[in-house]
Image (cartoon, rainbow, N blue to C red; front, side, top):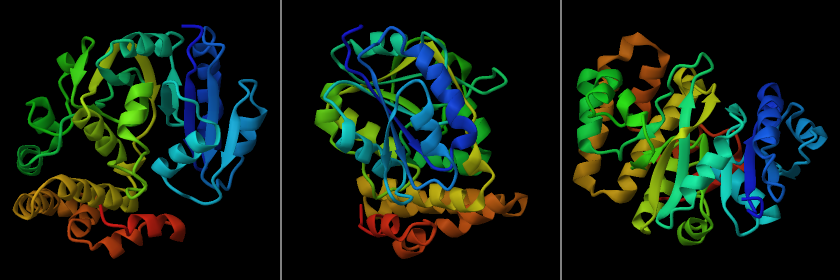
Length: 312
């Protein structure tokens, strides 16, 4: 394992409050991987994210993207500037790693059929974070619309798995949150770059689908554990609108017009039934029928919006 040429990519945007904590735990987790390289792609942060990365003892290489390019574009920029051909570990800045997390993920990645490995993720208070995803479908969309995401997930009908037994052992899964993902060198070649047309949200669902379509297994390493703060999209109406719009754009990419219409109606129904419950539900209701140009206006950077305007 010491010879593994692991590249670790962290995309930052105003991440100064959380970045040092990640780098501290990452430094320990990489102790047995002297050939690992840490790359921070900074999306034009207005705080000291880039400076924290440069000054940390871990010795990170910093790529200044130059504008708020989004998650996929940040990954692609980091890989283009410093990437090698080995496995690639992708991390959100608010992830915290247990010391053996990476080594256990690499052990699962050693299986020849595996292209992507994710760990078990916990909240800061130690409770389970529901990170396993099912492929979006009419069943998941209408189940969540009619009974709510929480109950649908516990029944095994929702897009997010909310059953503790699903996280109990190492196993093949459909997809997972993109907050932490380990990608094999062969999957990187087979899947290609991350799709920058999403800017934020659904890009990891798309990447893992392309990996599965290429014959690679997505695998949960339940014995590898990290913590993740996360949750910003659940309270920010603009981000939740972007999340909703990108769910629909992703679904449309892989399905016909009638299925997409029924999926859109499910999203609208769910948001409409909860319209008075808060601004995020109202934002989702409106986002379900946004044009691509209207979705692009949710993105803060004109250059990133130009990428998003290119149809999927």
